[in-house]
Length: 504
Ligand SMILES: Cc1cc2nc3c(=O)[nH]c(=O)nc-3n(C[C@H](O)[C@H](O)[C@H](O)COP(=O)(O)OP(=O)(O)OC[C@H]3O[C@@H](n4cnc5c(N)ncnc54)[C@H](O)[C@@H]3O)c2cc1C
Image (cartoon, rainbow, N blue to C red; front, top):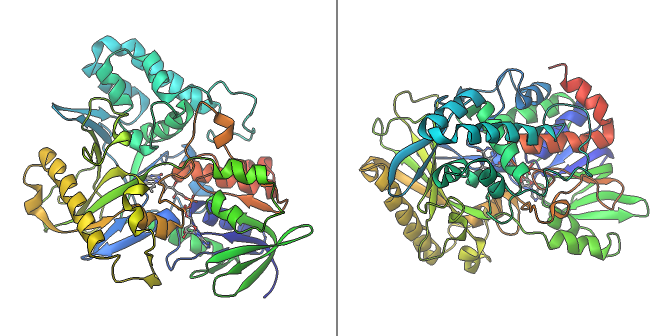
C-alpha cells in the first residue's frame, strides 16, 4: 500500500475536519474509521422510518459572520447544510419540579438579558455582569473568536475560575443562579470542578444563535466525506486501527484488526488519548505521560429514550427542555440508583417531512457507566452486531425507560398515548459506537482546580503523532472544530489557516 502524508485514525468530526483541511491543502490523506457509518457522534440511526441523532441535537454560532458559520464556510459546509433556526424567544427552556414556570434562554445577548431581567427584575445589574463577563471569557480564546493568536497558557485568569462560583458572583437570586446553570448537561457540569471557560464557550455559542440540523447531523459527515474525496483524500470504513507501528524516528504505520497496514509520514488520532496510547508499545512514550493521561477523569455518560410519535399527535417544539427535579441544577449528576432520573433533557428533531407535528423526540438523562458494567463483555456495533446483550439488559433498559417516561409525563400529560414506539441507548451504545472505554459523552472532563492537567495539546511525545477531537480542548461542534484547526496548524501554521478562514 502506498505511503500517505497523513493517516488519520477515527472519523469523528475532528478527524473529518482535519482530513478535509489537509487534503484541500494538497496532502495525501487517508482517514480510517472502525464503523460502517462515518462521523462518530454525528452518526444517525433510523427506527420506524424516523431519523434519530446520537450526538448532535443543536448547533450554535451559525448566523452569518459568527464563528462556526465562518469555520463551516471554510470547510465547504455552510451553503449546503439543511438547518432550522430555533425559537429566538427561548431556544432552551429550564424547568424544575414544583415550579410551573419555564425559564427561557433567549437568542442574542440583548434578548437573553431582557427576557430573564423581566422575570428577575432585581437582578438586572447581575445579569448584565453575567453577559459581559461571559463574552469576556470567550475573548481570551482567540481561535474561538476567529483570531490568529495562540491561547496564552500563562494567562490562567479564566482557567481556574469555577462556573458555579462565577454565576454566584454575578447574580444573587438562588433560582436565577440555577436557571443560568440549568443547561449544564451541555457540558456535564460539576459544581466543584467545571471551569467558567467551559460554561462560557458552550453557552455563548447558543446565545449567539441556535440551530437544528433538519433530518439529522449526519449531513455534516456526508458533506465532509464528499469534500475529502473531492480533494483526493481516501476514506476507509470498517477499518479498526489496533496498533501504531513505531520506528526510530516516530510512528511509521498503523495496523488494523483485519491485518491491513497503512504507512504514513504523519499521523493524527481522533480517538481518546488513552486508547491512542494503548496502541503504542511500551518504551516509546514516557510512563509518566501515560499515567497522567490515564489518570484523567472522563465526563459522565447518558441514557436516552428515542420516541417515535404516532402521526399528527405531538406538536413540534422548536426549543429544548432542560429539567431538573432538584432545585439545585448541579445536583442531577450525583443521582443515586434510587432517585434516578434526577434530570432530563428533551430534544425534538427537525424533520423535513413534518410541519406542525413532530415525528420524534429524544429524552435523555445522565447515566454512569457502572450501571451497565455487568454487560461490559457484550459488543453491539455493526458489523459485530449481536442480536441482543441479553434478556436482563432488555429488562434494565425497559425499567429505566419507563421511569424516564413517568417523569416526562408530568411535563407532557398524556404523552404515552402518543408514542408509537420507543428505542433506548445506554452508555454501552456510546462505548461501542464511539470506541471509548466508558461511553463518556464529552471525553476528558475539565477541572478548574487543576486546569492545565485536563487541557491537552495536539502534540504527543511522538514527534509525528498528533491528537484531535473533543478530548483536546473542548467538545461540541464548535469546540471540536477549534481543536481541528489547532491540530492542522501544526502542519500549515496557524496564521495561514486563519487567513484562509478570514476570507469567509
Ligand atoms: C449524547 C450527546 C449529545 C450531544 N449533543 C451535542 C449537541 O447538541 N451539539 C454539539 O455541538 N455537540 C453535541 N455533543 C458533542 C459532540 O457530538 C462531540 O463533542 C463531537 O461529535 C466529538 O467529535 P470527535 O471528533 O471527538 O469524534 P468522536 O465523535 O468521538 O468520534 C471518534 C470516531 O473514532 C472512531 N474510532 C474509535 N476507535 C477507532 C479505531 N480503533 N479505529 C478507527 N476508528 C476508531 C469512532 O468509531 C468514531 O467514529 C453531544 C455528544 C453526546 C454524546
